[in-house]
Image (tube, rainbow, N blue to C red; front, side, top):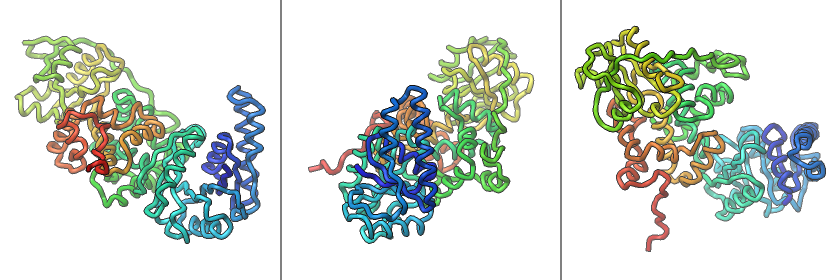
Amino acid sequence: MRIRVIGTGVMGRGIAQWAATAGHTVELADARHEAVGEAIEFVGRLLDRAVTKGRMAEAEADAVRARLVPLDAVSAPGDDVELVIEAVREDLPTKAELFAALEKVLPSSTIFATNTSSIPVTRIAATLADPARLAGLHFFNPVPLMKIVEVVPGAATRPELPGVLAELVRASGHRAVVVADTPGFLVNHAGRGLVTEAFALLEDSVAEPVVLDRIARDVLGLRMGPFELMDLTGLDVTAAVIDSIWTGFRHSDRLRPSFLTPNRVAAGLLGRKSGGGFYGAEPPAESPVPAVGCPLWIAGTGPDADALRAALPESPGDPDAVVLVPTWGTTVSAAIAAQGLPAARTFGVDPLSLPTRRRVLAVTPASDPAVVRAAAGALAVGAEAVSVVRDTPGSVAQRLIASIVSVATSIAERSLATPEDIDQAVTIALGYPAGPLAMGDRVGAERLLELQENLHESTGDPRYRPTRWLRERAELGLSLTTPAYPLESTP
């Protein structure tokens, strides 16, 4: 296939390298003509590096170079161009002007694709004389390594185009997911579950960013904590995406932004690119909690209390014992009040943290500092690390997983993407240990429903209201990845 890539910045270069490596002839064009040569040189250096490291034969690299064709003008005629991929700046008038020029010089059979990440595909298509020929092809940076592409049909896109583009993507070595033309498409929308809840925890002063990040990594298995991730991508970028998706979904409570971001952005605390964000060059080192045994009593009954008893030895009957109570979408203070427990000596333990390397201890305003140290030391027995956080409904990991799953199930519920595509795209693009629906299945649909109902009741916040998708699958004993019933098959 002959593909024209317009815009030779970071994304355009990556798309050109991906397409040429897959065997396509790639025309490169840019409004700044010298940028085309710079892009070809840049791709050439990457190919040389691949040869040096033994990842590509020299003859193969030479063949890829030969498939990169520089153009003098973005609107050069091209009767044999089958696909145009636009990767210019995120500005609707700029994109509209470009496609209007291309319509005049390229055949009506040429497919137009936009790499937009924030402008609705339908809006861009509406500026064309023939809106049916345009769809979204949303790549992720760095394109050759991020093997996922969102195929986004607009409202007027020809029905066969998404399938054609998805097959092209798959044949060229990347995973293709077809998603609805909605704010954030799929990956950026699904990613809001983690970062919006992380900010909510910060707003509630549950713990500092470094502690929240450690829990996200060690308890939930994420590659990076939410604040590390925002420092990497830039808080200005994250804040803009959060705001645009929340606005686009008409101020959905599940996607509510934090009041903390505007001032941090205004102050230039953007992360690595500004030299300072939530961290400096690196997150601060952690001081280990020494493991020290002490008399313990586990309060409550049920599987969570039994798991806690199995992990830590009890000293029943000791009047000075530290009291540990597992919480699930509820608070330690509520357990103290309901069970008549000694407030100064009672602490919460997140059941999600028990089988992991990091255990999480929750304290209340009534906690005795000396007893906190003893409780943390006791919890460290058999664990590699202990994090101490303030009491909140559900503790940290529970609130994060509840939000991640809630946003993903709301995407599935609205048929914005299939369950399989949701999990595949998020796993590849965001580096989660599994897709959000699969992560939910690890906890269990019934268990998650109980968690979200408890969070909703404890806080009164509609952001925790369970989705219909979760409730149905919990009630029917189904996996969260079970698709909706296909109505088109109904007789």
